[in-house]
Image (cartoon, rainbow, N blue to C red; front, top):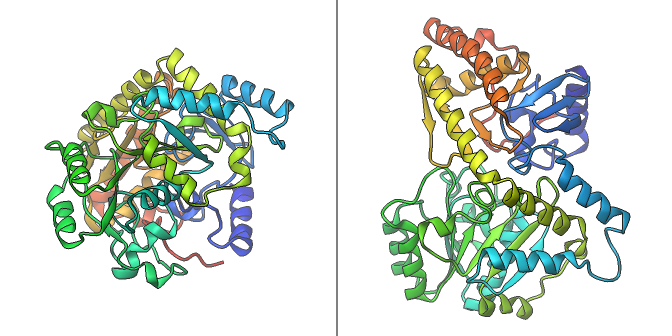
Amino acid sequence: MAKGQDLWKKAKKLIPGGSQLLSKRSEMFLPDQWPSYYSKAKGTKIWDLDGIEYTDMCIMGIGSCILGYADPDVDRAVKTRIDNANMATFNCPEEVELAEKLISLNPWAGKVRYARTGGESMAIAVRIARAYAKREKLAFCGYHGWHDWYLSTNLKDPNGLNDHLLKGLDPGGVPRELSGTALPFHYNQISELESLVEKHNDLGVIVVEAIRSKKPENNFLNKVRKIADETNAVLIFDEISSGFRSSVGGEYPKFGVKPDLVVFAKAMSNGYPMGAVVGKDEVMDAAQESFISSTYWTEGVGPTAALATIKKMEEKNVPKHIVETGNAMGALWEKLGKENNVAMHVDYGFPPIMHFDFEYGEKNLAVMTLFTQEMLKRGFLATGGFYVSYAHSKDDLHRYGESCNEVFKLIASAAKEGRVEKLLNGPVKHSGFQRLTD
């Protein structure tokens, strides 16, 4: 791993934070040991800079590679687009075809706008919603990216976002004037949203992750829809993480509720940059009242990759494989945990993005670091999370299970004897946003 770690140490001196994405920092996995960089990737396999091969049984490009790395069908379509030019003075026709496809998957909608990342797609959606509602305050639950509108939550309360996936986010550089414009509430806690509505009669937007690790309870999403209707607020469903996994399109239709805007990114284009805001005609038309424009939102690779990805998902019934594989992983974790007397909890809230937590109190981070360290030695990228891809096979799970069994045995013994930290070959992983030193 010398080449990867050497490059990572150099990166931290040249790039603030080392990487462009918090979730790809080596310190989030295995400080001083994580390979950090890849030379190539294919299917579920990834090779580091030293040519060592691993099977990715964790985050699969942060959930972006739903079909697997370097899918041949998507790549073939992209290469054709590149041969015919990715960018020109004219627009690429694929963006119109993709708009028609996204509207067919969301028939209540009438218009589409594009970006190339999830965070900027959410920023566009919030801008459009505020322009339509003509009110600035918004209520939200869940994680929605790095932009000012969201991070401003921590101006009023430094811990405001702690219960929304990432802890310790510093709002440095966000204008103080935005304090109090983004108001958090917890998923499935409809009384919290009701309380916000009572206190803020100028609430114009409600933003919700349709689903992440928890299923909506007691008609939660329908109740949110009702409140949005009663207050004339624009309802946005963030499906950046959940979309195009257990169904082709969004998860929200399963719960019998429709938003005013829905946002997609990540899995819809299998690793190529693409994001979309899909919405009702009258709401989306507000985009023409505000300046929302960017050169690279018009390039051709993103829409081309999305069309090819969606086509393959439909033809191969990819969501069925994703859900079955996710449930199989959850069952495997539970079985091995019980057999080895490992204190842990498996979360079945959303099978395409499976997750487990160790239950060793203040030792949890050290135990997870040991798990990642030992699985890496056995040729697997592994953490407490697992983004399922179409490329993950029964053989991948079988081989992973054999190694996981060995590591769980080690963890149970080490925890019982109080020697978890002694088995670590480096520091304990980070749990959230922290400033990195050179």
